[in-house]
Length: 260
Image (cartoon, rainbow, N blue to C red; front, side, top):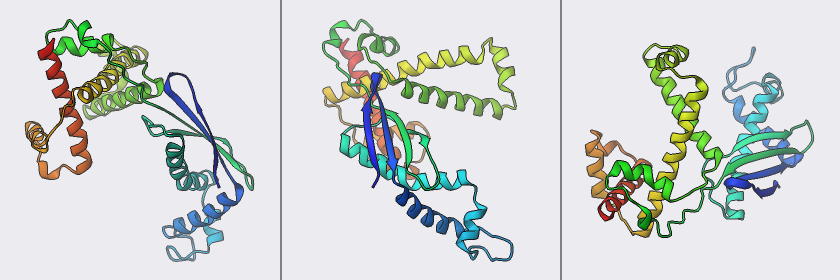
């Protein structure tokens, strides 16, 4: 049985250290090798027909350990969420603290919780009269401490998107940065501020929507999809839920604009 030590850190960060017993690792390794063997072809054997001991010898230790952990950690983390009744903002990053042949393994998971949004009398402090002004003002009026892990995740996503666009244009990052007069550091700092504000705004509008009891109908989601030029029949349920939240935040912003 996997045991864990759960600890809440500052700024909403959460650390969980899992201890995985050696016998469970051995059992899981047998399962993993059997699964991997189905796709492995070794000299003298047809695909999937090689003896398991030879298959295991052909797999690097790091790769085997990675597959073992991918079998065990998702369930362990899910159990931690239930046991400690917390809502992770992002999927955790795992770090091996101790991995050894024939011994227990210690694995650390690091994630974070979303900050609690307290609106209080925020409406009285809002001065903006336009949507653009309100977007800038809300994160200043409703103070939130956004976990660094969450901000870093958003920054990395923005950087990845930028790199993809640059590569599509056949450019190099260094050349692009020179053309806009920035360095990697200044760009990351810029994205850091943008990400912080974007996350704060999203959380605040979610809470505004809850407090104002704003609902979004299926028809509203369909109309929103049409404005993007997409085909509603190709939007799956998970995407619809995401779009529903987008529309909900838009409605919350519109409602605030009218009240200010």
